[in-house]
Image 1 (cartoon, rainbow, N blue to C red):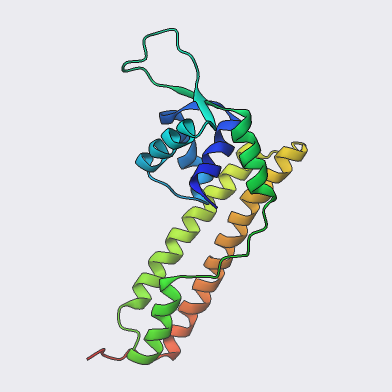
Image 2: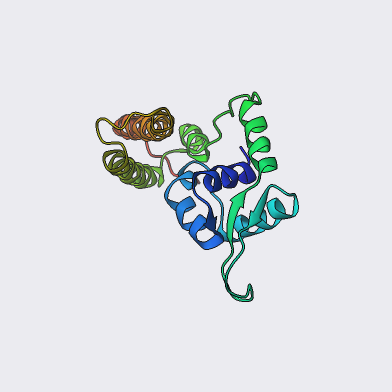
Length: 183
């Protein structure tokens, strides 16, 4: 995935200013593709220069006023091209898994507390996703676009469910593993 495509998606859903886009990004696409506000603004400039988006005309002078952006036909075509392009799944790359593997060799001192912290973070994210699901996908809201958006959210819910289950399993192993001094 690329940030420009995430921005095009968000702007097609709703034309927005850069500030509005970063706020929306933090509450939706940002759960699956993170970016700083600076990166988003930089990409907006590149997309505009590339002819994929444009700033909507403003009734007031542009100096100091926020720009509202919309996607141009070239941007929609690029997003459609990218959406239809096959991509291989990314392999899991998580330092926590490597740290657990290392703990099997050097001992578990200090890692159990971090596993509990990770569990808490994943439980909170899972609760946040479930709140979004309840708020944004009530029974009967099942149009084709809604179903696809809900499918993406369900992926997040399933992933957080996996992590919470896996972390609980990992923590259950700790009474059986000796905590060695790394020295």
